[in-house]
Image (cartoon, rainbow, N blue to C red):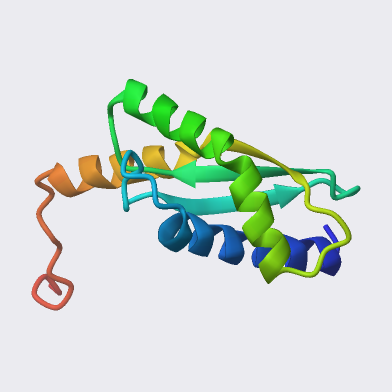
Length: 124
């Protein structure tokens, strides 16, 4: 990917995070939502926004995505005020399942009772 797309993705991610956290005043949204990844298409018409949210309730996760999708107009308007782009891409929100899986793996690894090796004590 080119530097242009990397920069666009980075700026979009920062702006979207700020808008969702501070400007989107919907009481149904948890403050624990964050934008984990943003990928804009080469023609800048579509932008896939991966949302990470620590919840096991699939109904709540689906509702969060629906709320964000319904708020797309407001979010795009706020993006237009904060970023200089020729046109605002269509936002496609989806859950980031990779981050959730990573958290679960870390939780499982931490719960294992594996004794630590003492590097300096067993030198025989």
